Length: 507
Ligand SMILES: Cc1cc2nc3c(=O)[nH]c(=O)nc-3n(C[C@H](O)[C@H](O)[C@H](O)COP(=O)(O)OP(=O)(O)OC[C@H]3O[C@@H](n4cnc5c(N)ncnc54)[C@H](O)[C@@H]3O)c2cc1C
Image (cartoon, rainbow, N blue to C red):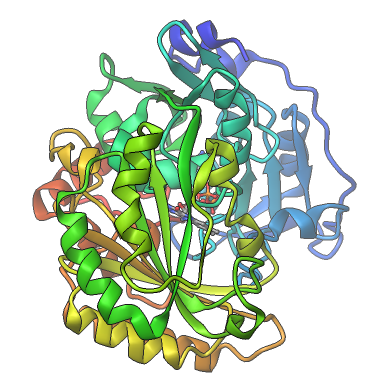
């Protein structure tokens, strides 16, 4: 990708309107709706478009357009969460920012509901519109690293595995998810925590620029010099403000980490938890710890007799020097008698993908979360009660230590709020496609109710549950942040065209 193009190209899309596309469209399956196709409208109701107009749109794209029945249609509408089974009336697969612009313009001018698929990992399925249009960015995965100013410009179809592939060669990294298949745009625009947020800030804090296609058909560049307000909103406000055609990240020097898992029996939760909650209070930024509570996976680190039994797993990342890392993490190995441990020096991409095998697609999932001020006896009691009675052996309850650089971003820096919480938590319920959802959802939301009674309030926007009411989105932001987000939304998308997301409504 031409990086200079991203940084210096005119922000006007009038010029892009004149770019000729190659017009590649797959075989049609529109015969069921003679003369036209009925789409869900973005403002509610239905919208009918003629086949001629749809064909003309498809011809104008360099990328492909898929219709129900086309080869690849079912694959394109399938996302990580197998509970989501939605059927867009049309899937556009842009090959360029110009294609993205044409797609947004076609949908908005015709009043059609449009969803955006980045990495397709949002558990709520925002990526897939039911009966509207879907813009699938999976064909846009180019990127470029600048060693000079330690930054990367990438297209929005990229996953963290691909991003790592690009940045690691240069000995650089930015905060990413703890599973490498997650898409960059949904993660970053929602906020982004992982193995590195205590050292380098949230994912969105490292977003230093973006090209955004707006609902009115403009290409707007947001960075520290232009549209600063928009950049602020993109740092945590999600996909509410437009479609990100390119993302520009600040990178940091990081080649390898001292990292791994420490397994304890869940019976030791009280002992280990009491120690941890205190020890982590003064932890250096280089130390990052997540607590995972679940049934033990069939890990070679564990005796076979432990497999399937409730365990507490500490996922530990140390980004500093080796000997100091060994010293700081040693007490974590002695909080009780560990069942197994795997701390060692490894490349950052190896660590970022270490949990991938447990989090592939094909399962049904429900996630719901919040923040905690302490990992105290009350919290541990709730964890112990619910994890021991988990409805599925694949489910996990995760608690991530916040603080460090993450907590230094102020209200003026990013829309992503609640920076003073000590921990973020998420209940991750996961079950087989062949099972009934009801008992898993009941376990999830009973667990959540018990935590909500003692948690710190608020929620990370990417951990809002599918079954929660739309009003829950407001809990993701402190009142001042929400007010500013609504004002920006009102000025850039007053009709709420971009609403297939954790929706911030215009005022
Ligand atoms: C296995 C797994 C592990 C995860 N680990 C972490 C983690 O460690 N830390 C963390 O913070 N989160 C984590 N998440 C949550 C994840 O960050 C969110 O689900 C995120 O939305 C996924 O991004 P995506 O691009 O894959 O999502 P998609 O489902 O493609 O999109 C999600 C949302 O982003 C919007 N969007 C996508 N692309 C664009 C774009 N180009 N422009 C504007 N809006 C866009 C969509 O409209 C939609 O609302 C994880 C999720 C999964 C499934």
